[in-house]
Image 1 (cartoon, rainbow, N blue to C red):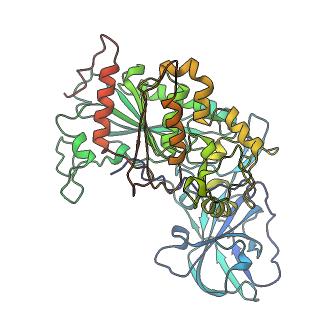
Image 2: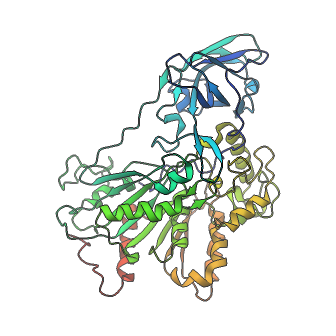
Image 3: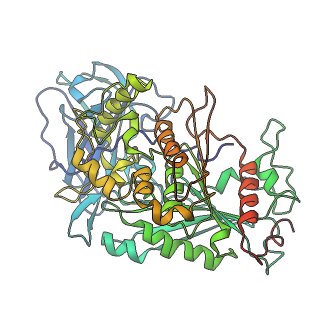
Length: 544
């Protein structure tokens, strides 16, 4: 199993324009047909504010909200229980641009309401966004959100037919797996983040313990910090054995092949601790592990609150040589960023298909410093789909709004006058906002640019700490920027950096990884042993 398999979301945009423009409820139907949505009496205690989604599909194998349905949306404010809201003909949509574009026909329809919370931030802005309920900003599965049961109906927006849907269902709380011998979880309110957001904000971690951890209470272990989109699952796909014994007979993958679990439970596998972070924000399922204008001091909170909490509760070797990082896609970018921003704290970054590390080849191959439009087709670099991908993703962004964690730039951009993230390009026209791009660069989020500006100060601290892999056929085009980072590192001087950069063969895809997870751990352990300071204990934790 490859690490970070949940990263297929990265390249679809989040639209800020739909977040800050709300409409009052109840909504008066426009001319023509109407889809009415009732919020029943007693469904909630107070009036609601949020975003109403209509899902439309031709089949009903599963609920429309859970499959790739046509999607339409509008904001609603002051929705009083007992009142109905009409889906407007002008409601924005994807792939149709608005509800009135939907072809008449027989469909299965369903609505979902994503609830917003008011945040009075310490930067002076008051915003409305969805408060994560430990689901990782997946509003389709977020506890407390309301939805209707699917209903088959003949939909003709231009007729006088009425379709009535009722928000009768409430998504239940997330069930967090209980701790076991192998997997432990922590979660706590962050003082830094709660202060910034004016609302309780939580951080967490899932910790995979090595074999023999409880039997050897005097031994401390190196730690692998694994970056990922939000997940409360065990790191690297570890599966609990049928019992808490040392047997690994249940760890096969169903095809007779040994799995990462099988290696982890074996007698001779190195003993390390693996930790994944949970750091959802009111905008996204993760913070990018850095401080940013829109998300606040998540970088500081991770470094000064979350990592110390992990190292206090578990027997981690709290020394730089024993801390390494890995991750893919968004997690790959975070892996590199943490290593680059904190070169003395971590001892190596293994990054797979990182999000764009050089903004001269941003998502879709766009140079956001010079290109005027993001929807162009970049034939000169051999990729002609990036502009189309950006265009389609932007339209979906207009529909989804802020809560879909579909694109990463909003963690980088400055705030607008209302406190919401600015777009680096116009979602309708694709016109790039070069001033926003420049602010992103100044804030250090273009990692190649940051390295070039700070190399004389940090270059000597990064020797041997870069291992970067890029796929050949990356659907998100993030491999393009890796080439630019590679060129920079190859040409570094004072000091020169011998980074390891590998490219996948034709047919390799996003988050391509040229080794198994167990082989990755072995590489990290080898690096830790070879770079440990004199006198460090590099034997007691190898195999017990």
